[in-house]
Length: 90
Image 1 (cartoon, rainbow, N blue to C red):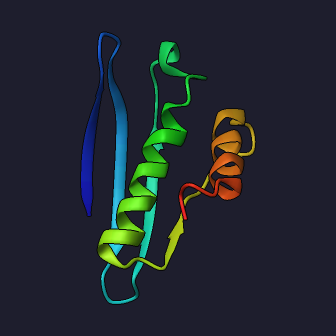
Image 2 (image 1 turned 180 degrees about the vertical axis):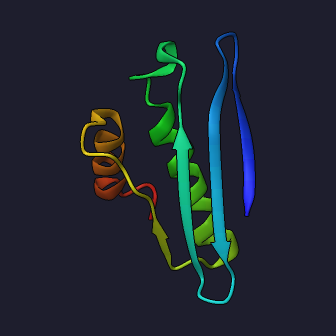
C-alpha cells in the first residue's frame, strides 16, 4: 500500500491518496480525497487518477484498477466518467 501527498501550490495539499497494489493479481485500488473546497472542480482528481492509472498499467503491468464513489458526490462521478471515456489513459 502506498500513501501519496500531492502538493497544489499555493492552495496546499490534496488530503489523501491511498493506493493498494496487489502484485499477485495485478490489480490496484485507488482512494482519493480532496477536502479543500478551493481545489474542487479544477480537474485535479481526473489528472491524478489518470496519471496513476497510466503508470500502473504501463510500468507495473496492472490489468485492473478499481475505485469506489458515493452517489451524492458529483465530482467523483464526473472523474469516473471522464476516466472511463478517456483514450489517453489506456
